[in-house]
Image 1 (spheres, helix red, strand yellow):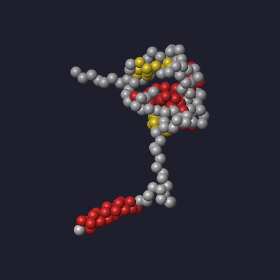
Image 2 (cartoon, rainbow, N blue to C red):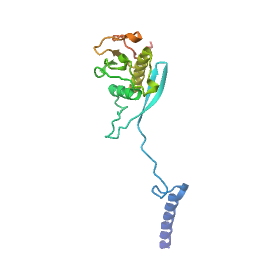
Image 3 (cartoon, rainbow, N blue to C red):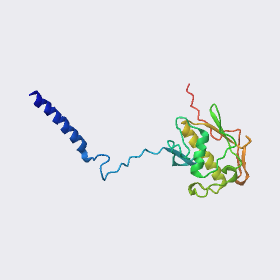
Image 4 (cartoon, one colour):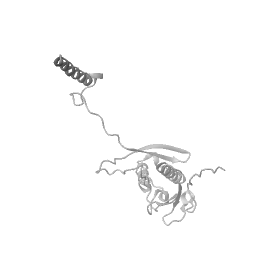
Amino acid sequence: MKKNWKNFVIYTVFAVSVFSLTSCGSSPANAPGTENTTEAPQPILVLSLGTKDNMKEYDYIYESANPNSTALTWDARNPDADTLLAIIAELTGWNLTLSQPVSVSPGSFTISFSKDSSIYTGAVDSSKTDFAITDRKQLVTTILDSIVANMNRAYNESLTIYFTAADGSDITVPEGNITIPASEPYAEAETEPTTE
């Protein structure tokens, strides 16, 4: 009787194993005629680009896991303002060359553009048709508003951001009749209303 019971248990376990392998019409992963199409998802950074009242979202795909990749990498847990600007420049074709790395002080960021940047030259990569803006005032506004939107998103808070010329003075672009004061925040952190 014990032997029959033991055989019964063995056959039951075997039958359950076979049934589980063939259930739901699934086939073994390496069976002929089946392909393994599972790929690791590509990391994506969603960027907001446009003017303050008219932002559109664009996906930037980067390859942080590939050591041979020339793609810029992004770490949302430890955002880096200079890398974010480089990613925006790569996606848009805008020249966002800085005169120095982004200056970070408690509660604020200062971004100083070089004379080679699109802010001053108006030049953009013509192959990036979505971002080739010919009106100088609109180009400068779009660049600065896009930077503010993405910095706020990257740091998950409203930031105080100053934009300056290479020497720390006001940004002036005579062709677009534009002056961005260096001493005033272009974007100011929203303060929580005080309750009394």
